Figure 1: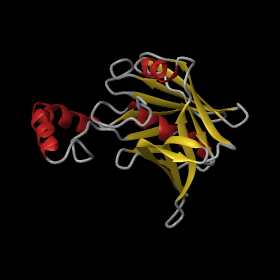
Figure 2: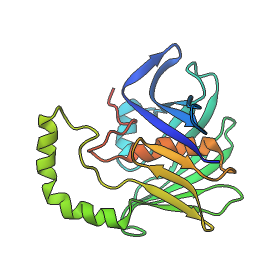
Figure 3: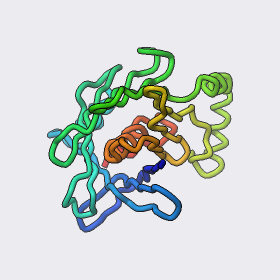
Figure 4: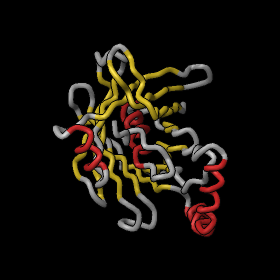
Length: 224
């Protein structure tokens, strides 16, 4: 059975009785089963928001996914192990146990495209690449037209979802299977492996869009 986790980023934080949240993650395992399972917020370092934003420029991320609006229980947390061209993140469960590790290799460091590796206990590494080579070729061929598309988007009410973006879809492969897929439309992660912990998938659903470029909106990049 395939389940999906969809990120809903907020340009303005949602205020609840428990605090302010920057994103929410919805879970579905079939028609009519959509429910919110996690509320995301950044975990700020001692230097606060300026320190977090400075570190994220080098690829660092730190956030927690709460199971409820009152912060009574954690779903998962993501911490940075290493940053830079090869950034590694540990996904931790409510008790601090490791749910898995996510590695991001920047484009042209271990291949032409950005490479994402998901490692979890008792399973082979799942490796995925950002975008298909065909669509990357189309993208680069169309790059000279992007300034005109940018101007057109401004005249049509601002830059939004209709502005052309670079390829973002990711398919992870492991042992001849495709356990995970990231769908660029709707920031959705599809889980095809029943043994994959949905909390790890929820962390992936929040982490991937946090690396959106300047055209997209990264939910953890707020300056307030």
